[in-house]
Image (tube, rainbow, N blue to C red; front, side):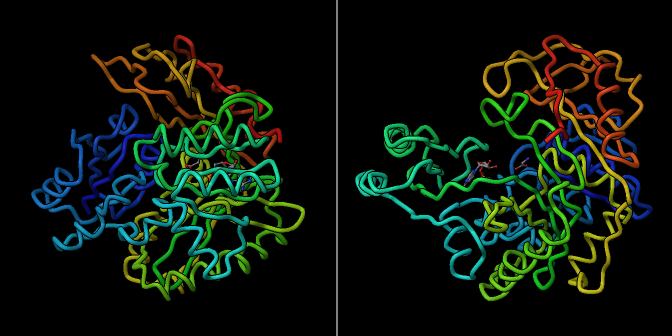
Length: 415
Ligand code: AMP
Ligand code: GLY
């Protein structure tokens, strides 16, 4: 089988690595891929950008299946376009992708189908949002409706902070249209969990639970990033939590997907907050998480290609996913200054000394040297019998690699 894999991050390197283990997969074209996929078995990077170029390539190269890593092409409607052209593609339709592409759509869907989530209101006029803020309890959470590269959520401690955020989102238009409409919601206090899952539109099978560490600094201080490290399974997701998740989140979500005819065959990722008063859904994502994927896929025993085809054939009802009875820990090495300003172009040294799994994110080969190209540069994942061993082994490895201004959190898995 010939696969086209869209995306260029650490998540896509992990997907490519996992797919390359499948006997069914002969070749993986990574569009555009990165320095990790460049060296990965069965992979070839192809310099493509935009839905039309992906489509042209898939048609001309007899691609058997296209797998989409990031949310942007899904929200733009890549799945509908490929299907119109008779091509097989794994991902939600444009309408289903609104579960991530529009926070207002997602919250209204949750409310309609009884998915447990924070109380909220949607606003399209600044005056109405401000008068609502005057009578809110604080802290309050303000979210841009559209995609904002993970930066569209503000937790505001006071009215004056919230007023400024509303002004920045709706009037200064810092998210170029994505914050013209906003959601204001109740603040939930708890611990977060990421549950990736796969759906064929009739069944949702959850993957092993995972815990991300979003803020840049230790102790969860500082601005949010795309994620600085993950552990799986998530130690807070005990049987009771998972049972509640299934009842109050997964089942009503599936009912909604079916009743709304969302045409959803793909990944659905539940961002949860586990609180004293129960398990809440913060958000849906319509793709795998980054760096959740780098911790979760190494624990999956099944053939990923086979699993994806079971979903496309709508046969998930009888499919079972098996997980290693082990623990994984993934730590991200980032460019100093990320998630704000950072420099790139630095050579990464000693990667051959890494003993665990290496997933490249923002780095590419230039004249046989691996050089940094992005904020999150690489991830190291180890899989061990205990969480403690996994954490220890990942940190031993990450100390071996080096590039100028390299930064990583030292407390992944501690909380
Ligand atoms: P989201 O993009 O909706 O997942 O939000 C990004 C991050 O903001 C989440 O991972 C949480 O850390 C935080 N967050 C979002 N919504 C809430 C909420 N209602 N209460 C507390 N924290 C939240
Ligand atoms: N790591 C969080 C995300 O991928 O959205």
